[in-house]
Image (tube, rainbow, N blue to C red; front, side, top):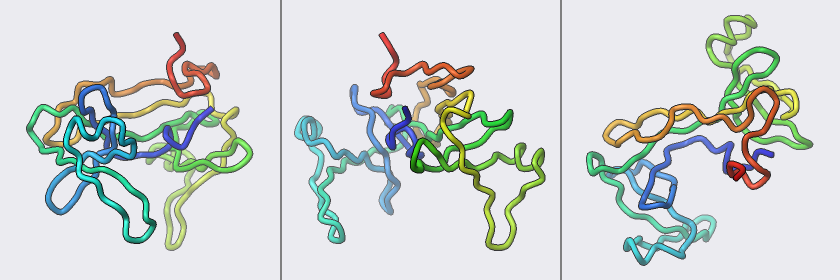
Length: 164
């Protein structure tokens, strides 16, 4: 049910009705678009990675300009504890990292060469949510917590959208 789009943590912001990645660069924040269908409307600059050849489009996203943006990561309740979903696995498994409170409860802390990570099936996670937090210099106009799955019931459809 979760897609790679859900699992990606990072900064996201709105440009009109488009929710886009925002990346930090040496000269400030920038919107990053991969879809070219609307880039001419906003005067995005076309760039191509010299390493992969992948084409993307960038546009400055200046602080204090009324842009709504937030940092997003995916949280989960697994065996009664709170984790952050780090990545997708195979066969319905996901890599999850314990929060500090969970590390304390489990007695499992980072050590030299070791970061606690667990493999969990999506069906074993009772709750999955998007946790959103403000980014300094941008407006924060979204809900801080949006549940995708609550008490074992999906609140989104297979496309990742809220059901009608």
